[in-house]
Amino acid sequence: MQAGIIVFPGINRERDIAMALEGSLGRRPRMIWHRETDLAGVDLVVIPGGFSYGDYLRCGAMAAQSPVMRAVSAHAARGGYVLGVCNGFQILTEAQMLPGALLRNAGLRFLSMDCHLRVERADTVFSGQYQRGQVFRAPMAHGDGNYFADADTLDRLEGEGLVAFRYVDASGAVSGAANLNGSARNIAGVLSANLRVLGLMPHPENLVDPLMGGVDGKPLFDSLAAIGVA
Image (cartoon, rainbow, N blue to C red; front, side):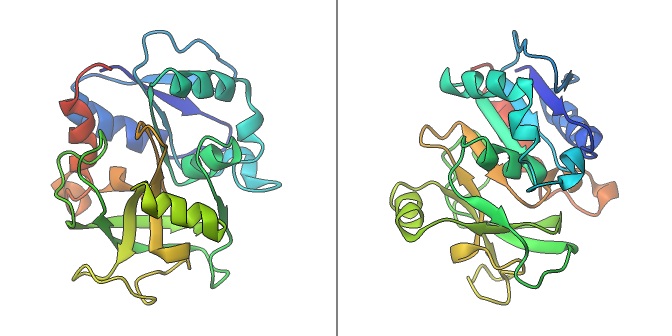
């Protein structure tokens, strides 16, 4: 599988994502500047975290209008794989490739700490190396990670099994205390209807090596490696 990482002005997690991908896929991902529109040969598009365009207007709103996002949308429409992490998730919602929006954290403070996520389904290209119900640790670093959608959309996501990950405590229990940013129904990540686009707020790429303090995030990248080429 060949991965490509979209680089916007202000993005700052592209090297973290590149290291995680190379460690699992065994090949260096292609860096794609946001003005490029040729995604030929790319199977997986990754939009990393950071502060695209300084988070002016709304987080991800300006990046969603960048030329490359039309190509990413077309890639997804063809059944290509897309992963958006943190600011990447915000960009995917602003580009209407995933439902909902990311609002200011409930406490109106930037959160930089570990959280626990529960795997809501393990039969996707992003989660095949996890077990359903498994709890893993992931760093969070965001000021606008409060996932919001209207009740009908939330019911549809739940009913169609499109909630990928949920904020929980270390035992796997859903609680308000575990939901640090206030996301609706403790939702940390959502999938597209065809299960090939994933957006999530925490950073699994920052726990892929023992030197980072753990490897909780590595199964996500190993899952992508396991599926081969689309």
